[in-house]
Image (cartoon, rainbow, N blue to C red; front, side, top):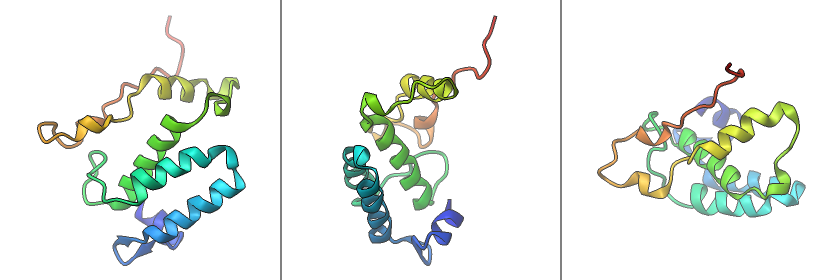
Amino acid sequence: MNCIFRESGWLDGSNVDKQKVSAYFDEFAKDQPEWSTAVQHLKTDCVNKDLPAQGVILNCPAYDIVHCALTAFIKNASPSQWSTAEQCAYSRSYASACPVCPNSCFAPQVPIGSCNACYLPPRTPQS
Protein backbone atom coordinates (compact mmCIF):
# COMPACT_ATOMS: atom_id res chain seq x y z
CA MET A 1 0.00 0.00 0.00
CA ASN A 2 2.80 2.41 0.78
CA CYS A 3 4.07 2.09 -2.80
CA ILE A 4 0.66 3.03 -4.19
CA PHE A 5 0.39 5.98 -1.82
CA ARG A 6 3.95 7.09 -2.57
CA GLU A 7 3.41 6.91 -6.36
CA SER A 8 0.11 8.81 -5.98
CA GLY A 9 1.87 11.54 -4.00
CA TRP A 10 -0.16 10.74 -0.91
CA LEU A 11 2.80 10.08 1.38
CA ASP A 12 4.90 12.72 3.06
CA GLY A 13 7.83 10.68 4.28
CA SER A 14 6.12 7.88 6.18
CA ASN A 15 2.98 9.88 6.94
CA VAL A 16 -0.18 9.93 4.83
CA ASP A 17 -0.93 13.36 3.39
CA LYS A 18 -4.61 13.37 4.29
CA GLN A 19 -5.30 16.60 2.41
CA LYS A 20 -4.18 15.00 -0.86
CA VAL A 21 -6.19 11.84 -0.19
CA SER A 22 -9.23 13.96 0.62
CA ALA A 23 -8.75 16.05 -2.54
CA TYR A 24 -8.54 12.88 -4.63
CA PHE A 25 -11.85 11.62 -3.29
CA ASP A 26 -13.44 15.07 -3.72
CA GLU A 27 -12.51 14.87 -7.39
CA PHE A 28 -13.81 11.29 -7.58
CA ALA A 29 -17.16 12.41 -6.11
CA LYS A 30 -17.32 15.29 -8.59
CA ASP A 31 -16.70 12.90 -11.51
CA GLN A 32 -18.97 10.18 -10.08
CA PRO A 33 -21.78 12.03 -8.24
CA GLU A 34 -23.63 8.81 -7.43
CA TRP A 35 -20.77 8.00 -5.05
CA SER A 36 -20.79 11.34 -3.22
CA THR A 37 -22.56 9.96 -0.12
CA ALA A 38 -20.05 7.13 0.20
CA VAL A 39 -17.17 9.59 -0.34
CA GLN A 40 -18.46 11.84 2.45
CA HIS A 41 -18.59 8.85 4.81
CA LEU A 42 -15.13 7.82 3.67
CA LYS A 43 -13.70 11.26 4.37
CA THR A 44 -15.39 11.48 7.79
CA ASP A 45 -14.59 7.93 8.90
CA CYS A 46 -11.27 7.24 7.19
CA VAL A 47 -9.41 10.43 6.34
CA ASN A 48 -10.38 13.07 8.88
CA LYS A 49 -9.41 11.09 11.96
CA ASP A 50 -6.69 8.77 13.20
CA LEU A 51 -7.66 5.16 12.58
CA PRO A 52 -6.94 2.15 14.74
CA ALA A 53 -5.21 -0.71 12.93
CA GLN A 54 -7.72 -2.06 10.43
CA GLY A 55 -6.42 -5.60 10.31
CA VAL A 56 -3.39 -7.76 10.79
CA ILE A 57 -1.05 -5.27 9.11
CA LEU A 58 0.13 -2.93 11.87
CA ASN A 59 1.78 0.49 11.59
CA CYS A 60 0.61 1.00 8.03
CA PRO A 61 -1.69 4.03 7.80
CA ALA A 62 -1.98 3.57 4.01
CA TYR A 63 -3.47 0.09 4.52
CA ASP A 64 -5.77 1.41 7.24
CA ILE A 65 -7.16 4.11 4.93
CA VAL A 66 -7.62 1.72 2.00
CA HIS A 67 -9.42 -0.85 4.16
CA CYS A 68 -11.60 1.84 5.71
CA ALA A 69 -12.36 3.29 2.26
CA LEU A 70 -13.45 -0.11 0.96
CA THR A 71 -15.69 -0.49 4.00
CA ALA A 72 -17.19 2.98 3.43
CA PHE A 73 -17.92 2.20 -0.22
CA ILE A 74 -19.52 -1.17 0.59
CA LYS A 75 -21.62 0.17 3.46
CA ASN A 76 -22.73 3.37 1.74
CA ALA A 77 -23.34 2.39 -1.89
CA SER A 78 -26.97 2.65 -2.92
CA PRO A 79 -28.55 -0.58 -4.20
CA SER A 80 -28.74 0.87 -7.72
CA GLN A 81 -24.93 1.04 -7.79
CA TRP A 82 -24.47 -2.70 -7.40
CA SER A 83 -24.08 -4.35 -10.76
CA THR A 84 -26.26 -7.35 -11.47
CA ALA A 85 -23.74 -8.63 -14.04
CA GLU A 86 -22.73 -12.26 -13.62
CA GLN A 87 -19.03 -11.36 -13.26
CA CYS A 88 -19.95 -9.36 -10.14
CA ALA A 89 -21.77 -12.22 -8.38
CA TYR A 90 -18.80 -13.17 -6.20
CA SER A 91 -18.21 -9.57 -5.10
CA ARG A 92 -21.91 -9.06 -4.30
CA SER A 93 -21.94 -12.29 -2.32
CA TYR A 94 -18.82 -11.31 -0.37
CA ALA A 95 -20.11 -7.83 0.40
CA SER A 96 -23.46 -9.10 1.60
CA ALA A 97 -21.96 -11.90 3.73
CA CYS A 98 -19.14 -9.97 5.37
CA PRO A 99 -19.74 -7.59 8.27
CA VAL A 100 -16.62 -5.60 7.21
CA CYS A 101 -15.70 -4.80 10.77
CA PRO A 102 -18.34 -3.17 12.93
CA ASN A 103 -17.12 -0.30 15.09
CA SER A 104 -17.47 -2.40 18.23
CA CYS A 105 -14.78 -4.66 16.82
CA PHE A 106 -12.21 -2.16 18.04
CA ALA A 107 -13.18 -2.58 21.69
CA PRO A 108 -10.08 -3.17 23.85
CA GLN A 109 -11.02 -6.79 24.57
CA VAL A 110 -11.00 -7.71 20.85
CA PRO A 111 -7.55 -8.89 19.69
CA ILE A 112 -5.92 -6.89 16.90
CA GLY A 113 -6.57 -8.46 13.51
CA SER A 114 -9.57 -10.58 14.50
CA CYS A 115 -11.88 -8.13 12.78
CA ASN A 116 -10.93 -9.09 9.24
CA ALA A 117 -11.89 -12.73 9.63
CA CYS A 118 -14.69 -12.61 7.08
CA TYR A 119 -15.61 -15.94 5.64
CA LEU A 120 -15.05 -15.85 1.89
CA PRO A 121 -17.74 -17.51 -0.16
CA PRO A 122 -16.45 -20.25 -2.46
CA ARG A 123 -15.33 -19.11 -5.91
CA THR A 124 -16.63 -22.18 -7.69
CA PRO A 125 -20.00 -23.86 -7.27
CA GLN A 126 -19.89 -26.81 -4.92
CA SER A 127 -21.91 -29.91 -5.56
